[in-house]
Image (cartoon, rainbow, N blue to C red; front, side, top):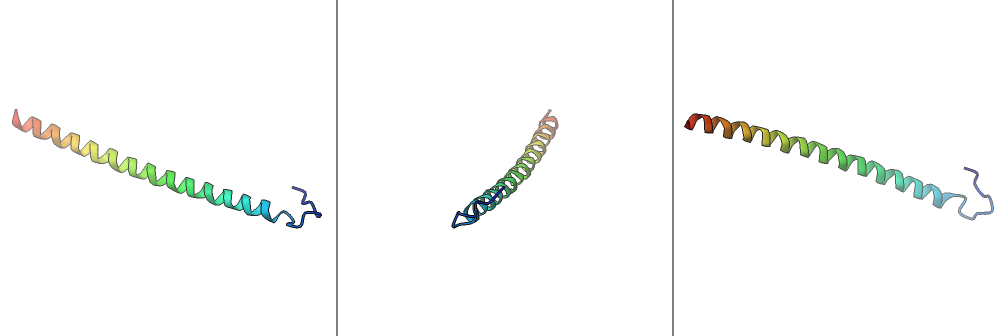
Length: 61
């Protein structure tokens, strides 16, 4: 990107916005990773509960 030397900010505002956007993207990626981990954890819990219920049902028969 060519910086306009007549701009009193010298592209600083642009760089700050780009940096902020990068930080937001990092935060989004981290939040997405946490959601994936939580979803996997809940899936494992549900699977264990299903197996436990199946064993209990089989024991009653």
